[in-house]
Length: 207
Image 1 (cartoon, rainbow, N blue to C red):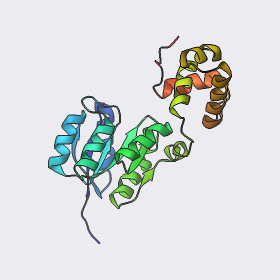
Image 2 (image 1 turned 45 degrees about the vertical axis):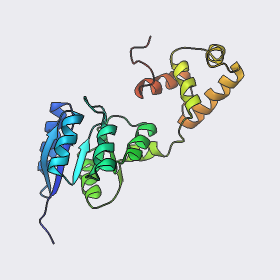
Image 3 (image 1 turned 180 degrees about the vertical axis):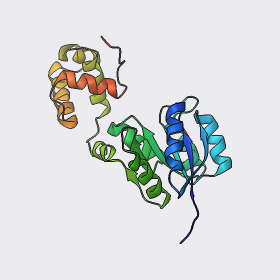
Image 4 (image 1 turned 90 degrees about the horizontal axis):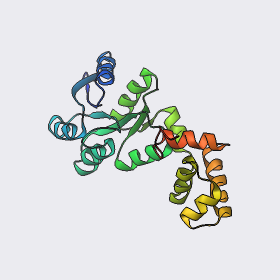
């Protein structure tokens, strides 16, 4: 038995969210928040100095992105284990985070117990994906060409126009669309548009 606490560092640019996380973690007798930052550069510097056991890190940060923070503190510095805490649930983001060195991936819409479970699991050397992130990580990823086609579809281009832009036949463009729908489990163009907006492929203010 040991009463040593897991030392946690938070990286989140929204003050209210960060305060909520601090309050949540402080309810756990085995966890201790030792620092927090609202931007990536500050986080990298303080993590190197404070040497926490676990870092909870958002992906969308000013200064350095969350992926850059993970890369620097895990792969380059051999630092703490990192859990991504984000709104992005697309499998591409899950994959990028894991490739950067993250040990956990939790969605902000998850229950509070998921956050606590993730910190404890990662601190003990395990990996942790929240259920939605785990489901997304199993989705077959889109190829670069399919992402191009999806972006153009979401921008309102028809198959013939996509073919002209990408210098492929309209029939090939239609085949790409069919594969995209199969991979994502989406059955209409409106659904593809929502997916593209949600995952940052097109502007959310797109008419």
